[in-house]
Image (cartoon, rainbow, N blue to C red; front, side, top):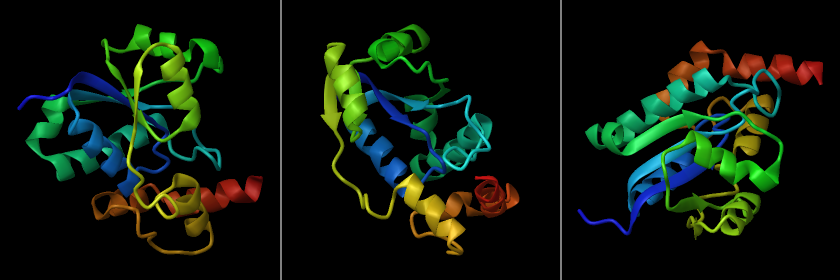
Amino acid sequence: MEYPHRRLVVVGRFQPPHLGHVHLIEYALSLAEEVIVVIGSAQESFTLKDPLTAGERLHLLDKLLKSRLGEDYCRRVKLVPVMDINMNKVWVRYLEMLLPSFDGVVTRNPLVAELFKDSGYEVIMQPMYDRGECEGTRIRSQILEGVDSPSCIPDEIKEDLARLDFAGRLRRLSAKD
């Protein structure tokens, strides 16, 4: 199959991975031979905003994408945890140093779009996917409010989140703040 791009980047924190992320990655795969999924803020964990470790997010996302995308996933998607550098002006150059060459980014994040555009890359705006529901902040809030299983959490990772005691972790972190 012929794709308009060789390699595109997708950036997210995946706290936790949800159906909006799946939609984003599938959309990027419709446009490129390969997709590099940057698992951002890799150094952050055990906070209310970033409760999962990079390793936990990598495992959950890997399991989810293997289930949804099958064999094609292993060949076409690379998951790369990346630590923050807290210097927006050089962040895309930092990614260039860490990642294989890429053609552009698929995003809905205005800051990510601006930084890639300023660095000369093509920015592809992802079509909206149930943004009001499928958003990490909302999912974490719903869990804290007692919603057992928010609708945007894919079935493939619910058992893993339970094993990690994700809801309990959120409650404990919330009690600290």
